[in-house]
Image (cartoon, rainbow, N blue to C red; front, top):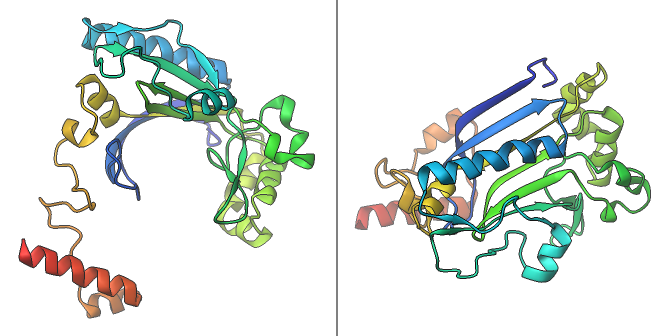
Length: 275
């Protein structure tokens, strides 16, 4: 968007260090879209009719519990349903009932117990709500963000946000997150400089295609709706990955494994030998 491309979408293969829950895989397919000169309402009004039409075409026998999709604040969702991806079906086992819900008014930050500081709820490039910008200076933990998720039958299928496009706001968010001046310049200097030239307001959203396919197929685990899924311990039995490499190969790329990593590598090698 900063480079002058007004809008785009891509269907991309993603690799992520995911924990091994049923609705996640280390390798998955994602649809991602970004647009300039849009607000949160534009994104929601683009995705909602698309999903309604998708249900009509692919699952004509299924019913959508409520249209327009209900909008639930993050606070209400946590307090009422104890989750930020509530399952609003009357019968939680009915795979022919589709209960969509937008989760909005997500907090900008939350206090991390492990790190002992504020961290981003969505990501550090999410724009604060206009009415909450002053809270960044006084009570950042109370500031809400232009971030939104679409939940379906207890799963998050879309997630997105309106991005920050102003240098002063982005730097302020980095300061709240404890990002040093050196790290800001080293990792994000190019972006901060670009913002000075008048970057357009922009936002987007992304969908987990495998997860949607699993829900439409009536499966609880996405591995049942994708080709060649990874095992429960993130191994690829088709490729025999991850595999061990020699000490010489590590030296070539100037990598030294810790004792724990070496032990894990030997454990994996032993398991492959026994298999």
